[in-house]
Length: 426
Picture 1: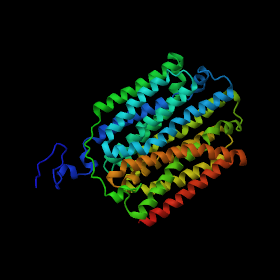
Picture 2: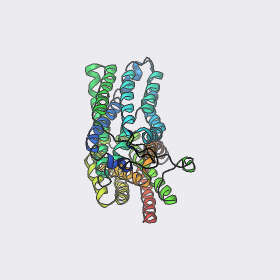
Picture 3: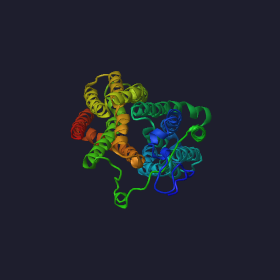
Picture 4: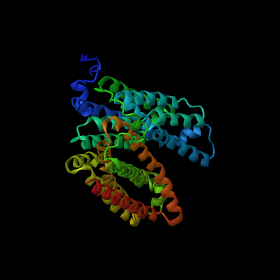
């Protein structure tokens, strides 16, 4: 048998080279720290660019020819949300391609694509082009999702929770800083110029990704034909593995659902706390930012805790703590009380996504990790869609305070479900 090494690091014939048999994390042990730093910066810039348009999006919609106030509100909501719809649709596809061709090409694709699309948004002639380009940004983008796939599979198992927590901090920081910059930048360079600046920032991330990110990728052997027919091929543990993934995907959806159930109508809720009309927008922005700020403070710490005591314990503990932090929000009498409680809730939510990602990684084998982490991203965006719809429906029919009670009950039910899954696996 010919066992001469090939250029890909494998042997012709049945034998395989030692470096090919090493796991993906093992082969990239010397690269993951630098890759993490680049991914944090890239995730920060892309999320900053996507969220910075929040303060001036209605102004841009009006600039594109929409005149009535109701139409401006409607088109602004569509233009903002359609990006997340696009990302939810394509995240599993990009994850599967990452399993086939490597994680770095997906990062480069997302960064270059986002840089081009964000710059092109500044050239839109009408609101239809704006919505189409925002949708394209979701379809072709997803740098943060690609980063989660890379770091979630490259970081050593004993450090993956901490690494994913650091990555989550970069994402949250981008979401937090984006609207602040978006409130200042148009006054300096104009609305269209702001989109060009956003594209330039992402272009810097693209250059750093191409130049600094390193990956030792060896495509795993294709599974047997019967396994390839299964949409969930690569799940470990049979029926228990499927139940585990169902619990984790549901929990990931609940993370965004619990945060977004009240945020679209939080201004109305704050108005009931005797906040004057001219301060309403400012106070609402502060209250919304408190949740992201709390998560930034605790994401890395709770990720490291998951490395020490196990991801399941952190997931269940954070779900229970978040549900307890939701209930007092229904009884506040001043806006600063709500802000403080939203900050605490952000802290308790922070440990969920790093721990969930860590558990998904260990529930599937290496050849399917990218695809499954892509499904995980889709579950999160589903929560971002369902949360406002659920919160709005409950608020209209039962009152705004009941949104907090209903969300707390859902979180407790999710914690019970995860406890049952954990015991069955044990």
